[in-house]
Image (cartoon, rainbow, N blue to C red; front, side, top):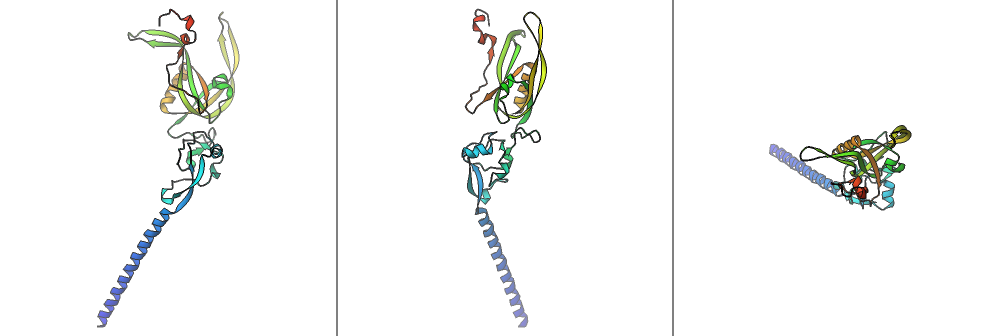
Length: 260
C-alpha cells in the first residue's frame, strides 16, 4: 500500500512538472511573438534621396521622417537618429519607404575614406580647367563626359579606311563625381598655321568619378585616343547616347557638295 502511494505521488509530481514546462514553453512563445510585434522607431525616406545628396539637404526637403515598424521588420543597421550621419551624403539611391541605414551614407571625396556607390568602381582622369567646367565641378556633382578625336576613321566593308576628321560624341551620360584632387601646372606646346610653335602653362586637376566596368572601358579608350570634356549636370539636365557630331555638322556650308 505504501509503495502504491509513493508511485502515485511520483506520478503526480511528474505530471505537475510536465504541465509547468508546457506552461513555460507557451509563455516563451507568447513573449517572443509579443516582442516581434513590438513597435520601434526608425528613420525612413519619404521621397527619393539621390546619390550625393547630403543628409541636411534631405531633411530640409522633408525627405526623412520618423516612423514606427514592427521589430520583426526592422532592417539590420537601421537608424533612429541622424546624429551619426549628420555630415554625410547618400552613396546609393534611397527610395521612398526605405529604412535609413548607416552604410548608405558616407563622405564623398574624402581621400582617406573614398566612398564608392554599390556595384561601381572609382576611376580618375586628368583635365584642364576649361575641360572640367572652369573648376565648378565638385564632389557630389553629376557630370556627362564627352570625347573629341581629331582623326576619326571608319572601316568600310571592303576593309579600307575612310577618314572622317574631327569627331565629338558623348561617352558617359550621367556619373557621380567622387573626388577632386589638387591642381598642378604643366606645359603644353601648340603649332600655328605657319609651322611655328608656342608653349603655355596649363593647370590640370585629377577628378575621380564612379563608373561601372563597361563605363570604365569606354572612358579609358576615350582618354587614350581623344580629349575629354566634362559637362556639369543639374537634376533636370537631359543627356542621351547619340551618334555625335562631325566637323561638317558644325560648318555644313564648307562641306556642301562633298560626298559623305
